[in-house]
Structure formats: structure tokens, C-alpha cells
Image: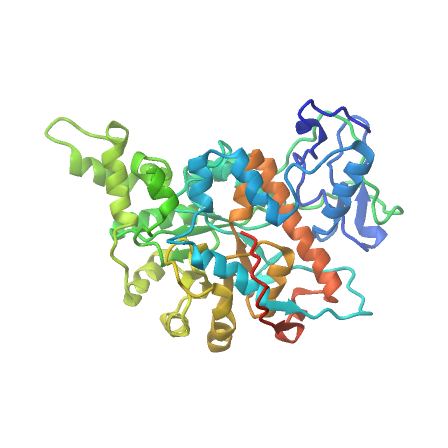
Length: 498
């Protein structure tokens, strides 16, 4: 159904992703007995075709077809650009200068940030032909659980600085696509508030408008037997820890994460102190200093009590809200103390977290990877924090193969830093990573168009992964290996996508 465009060419021409969820993207090459197509004149179909499979698998590549369909039939443009090289500029124009600089900026002269992208360009894929790649299966198994795709949302703090939808918006976008959301200790929204919001949207109501759905790959699909509903997967969430100095506060945070259903603990190792970040220094933007990004601490009962005990005098009981600046300094002194924990301290985390998986984020050296394996953690994330911490550090992708060779048989090795395209994901997986974390692009989508923008960028990346797997001649993630890559160094191959 054609709809009028808005005067600015934005809202009315964009796909509405309100109902994009695990059941709204059809499964390519799904047997008729396991698929249903719904067309109800009283409800608005999703901008992706509403097809449910018996296994609740998302055919992520379908999103590409849906974008074309809506452009051709309704004149709708994507809510953000699908070009990873243009997304950054679009975000720059849409976001506040301070918010954009904070998520975009790297440490020092941004040499490591640029090196992350250049490292991906040095690896080229070698596609194979005449191989059946349908139906593709993007699922991976991490720590005994199967996830629908190898993509995870990286923990990014202070998301209220980018858009009012903040962490809740990104968490909803992730839940709609069955992508694990990693909650950051530096979040601007309390963990429990996000969990409550996700539970409220587990079964979203259809939009009241009506719109013709995109054609399905299986026009003969039939509905499931009457009375049988397809079970929707629960949104996966992990918890990222900026490790406090005080073990009591650490214990309280981890207890809350366990109660909130966080499946994996991600311990960030490379941010015990702030890096030299010129873009933030030049504008004096440090959100934690004024209370933004401190929601987890400010909502924690143990932290609040310790703050009150420290600053109250006589009968004058002081709460966090009474002196936000002092509370912010106290919280920053815990999570960004300048004092790094030691390897032996991991025993404390194991005791507090129990038998759930622990993953160390920020490992770049083979030696540290070996120490991690000896320490009893379950996994590591090869990461240089996206070039935001130590300028001049080695690109994460450069170290990935060596680390996988050293500890890949003992630890689950994940990858972070520099992912921008679907082929980037495939390269990291072929080099041995079991899954990858993506950060800045999704936040750019958030900054441009809130929850819907984040969802669109993430859906686009997953569609790119799906389609690129097919073009590479691969049907499952497990088929990816180093024989599909060749490392080449071209003197002029310096263009980067940041």
C-alpha cells in the first residue's frame, strides 16, 4: 500500500520496524508444514514478512528483500543509510557534538582505531562456487547455549548521551533480533529497568494500521495446527563489569546481574583508568562526573549505603541524590580507580559469580590469553576497546589467529573492535573467533533514529552476514576457516570505514 511521504522525506518514507521480532522474518527454504504467513486486514503487517518457523530461526537475509520491497511498492527509504561508510557521517549530523564525539572518538591520534579497520582490509575472502547454501544456519554455540547468530551487542555505556531511548532502546532492538545484549556497568539506565521493559515487550501488540506484507519465499506455506503456538525465545542478556575496588560493591552488582537473568559475566580489563581522548578533553565532556552513566551504581543498595556512611554527619543523613557530584566521584573511584586488579583476584569473581561463564574482555597478547586459560575463566574477548584506550596498540584482528592457536582448545575466543560489515564478521569467524561483538554502528543507528535506528542497523548487519555467507559458498558458521582467506598488503589499500 502506497503511503504519502513527509515533507522532509524522512518519517513517512521509512520502514516501520515496530514489530520486527524473532517471528517477523521468514525462513528461506522452510518446509510448508513448518511455516505460516499471516495477512489480516485489521492489523498492520511487519515491514518484514510475518512468517513463523517451527524452530524460530530468523532468516536474517530476508531483511534485504524487505527493504527492496518497501522501496518499490511504498516508496519507503531505510530509516538510516545501509552504507557503513556513510553511517558515521549521518550520525554526526543527527547527534549532539558531545554525544557523537564520545562514541566516535578514540584515544590519542586514533591510530589504533584506524588500524582496526585497516587490519580487516588486509584479509580477503576466497569464495567457492556451485555449492548449495540454503537454508543457511548462522547459529553458534557459546558456553553450552545455542544463539541464533554469531553477533553480540558490545557493552557501551552512557547511551542516554546518544538518544533518549538509551540502553532500553538498544536492548529492545537486540531482543527483536535474538541478539544477546551486554549490559554495561556504565549504563545510564538501571539493569532492572531494562529487564522490566524487555518483559513488557516479549509479546508486542500489532500496529493498528494495515499494510500489505512482502511476498514470501514459500507461497504454499500453511499455518501450524490449531491450538499450537510457537514458543518465542527469551531475550538473552549478559553483564559487563567494570570491576570495583570494593568487594562488597562487586558482590552486590553481580548478585543483581544474576537475579536479572544475565547468562555470562564479561569483565573488562582495559578501562581501570581513563584514556587520553582529545575529542572529549577539548569539549570537557565527561558524563560520569555529573552523574550520567552511573545508574547502576546509584541504584545499588550497597553503594548507596556506603556513600551515605561516608558523607553523612551527625543527624544529617546524605543520600546520592543530595550530592550527585560527590556520589559520582565516589562511584568513579570504584570502577575507574586507576588500580588494576591482579590475576589472582579472579578467584573472588568466580566465588561471587558461581558456575556461570566468565569472559575476560581486552586480551591482546598470547601470554595473557594463556594466563586466562590457567585462571579458570571460560572465555576471552580479543579486543583493544575499539581503539578507545591505548593509542598505538596492535589491531585486535592481527592478534586473533595467534591467540586462537594458543588457547582456542581451552577457551571460547570471541572478537571485538572494528566490525562494520557482514564480511568483517565472516573474516573474524574464519580466523577462529566463535562470535563477534559490534558496537559503534548500532549506536550510530540509535543516535540517528532511536530504537528503530539501532534495530535497522543491527538487522542490516545480520542480513549482510547471511547474504555474504551464501556468496562465499558457506551454509553454516562452522564451515568458516582460514583456507577461505588470504592476507594481502596493498600500498594503496588504506581506505578505512570507521
